[in-house]
Image (cartoon, rainbow, N blue to C red; front, side, top):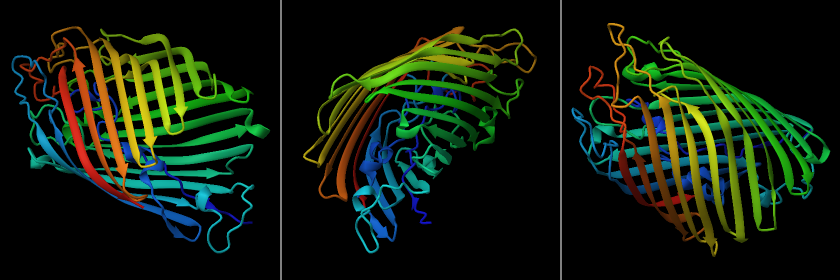
Length: 470
């Protein structure tokens, strides 16, 4: 039996929700994509012709960029009294090598010695993987130079058959963004690893598809001062898709997530963290309205139960969740999308935060050589009531000026790239992030060294670079 192993990418550029308190609170306060290069998140943009090695292809590449960051430490625009943080901008050098692997892609399967034109039988095994690293040099603070990393692997057994299963693992090391530079020696690097198993079932023709899976996730801070935020997460997922029209399907998903902070101590941590169980279930429709317009919508309900270490503070969550997105493709290579989503996540400040977000995106490829992408979003974020952690004497110690926190967050990203050849390109990107809130931290409290979250700030980033991808 011929067994072919196909290596496609499961590589995602390092992404941060940021840090929230210390390195943690901002994790919930910053849109994703702070550390990501747009071209690394899309396989079609990260690979060129490839190096053929028998049944395999290798796609190495490297990008070199210079940039500017207007607010390196996410310093608050209107800092509270006692906040010693300083507003610092900096030049940045970023070098990003990557390596993607794959067996012969569809357009190359017929090339080379021993090839065949019969590709109707899918392989028995597919294996996908990739690795990237990002070296950062910050000209305003050389002590912050560091390396981020992303490694992804995915094994699929019996793909495109009535029953198949997937084993995967993704490892990341994130180093950005920073928070207030109050503890100059603090190492804000964070290790993340998520691995899991998926079982896939489908009828002939794929009219009915069912997936159930389990994922284990570890989030680990390298600095001992921040390890109260280390967590284990267990997630069980069930998804079903029923295609009742050629381009329209009914979809459903349910997830259950259990979160445990395994290094947390209510008497020593600077924030009140709660182990939790979260359940969300949604049902919706995904389909085409015309040949150029499609829409997807999901509506459901979510609930979270939080085991607060402070018996006087009990706050759970239950509310509707959902998403609606409209997509328009006026011509080949050009697409628009606009949407709204509502959800909640466990937080490092106030148990959880709920988010209502509107977003819009545009991407076009002109002449096969120039790509332009624009994305924007506005979100309302509500942390609910914020529990004051217990001090050394057992008395709650408020960490801010208000009993709750509400934010308006704005984000915008621009990306452009011109390809001189199918392996050489020059790219430019710009990003704005703004967080607006009346919440301020009590930096003059005994917890001042640990409360580093920028409660209200503006940040601009811009990069210009060249990359080689083969």
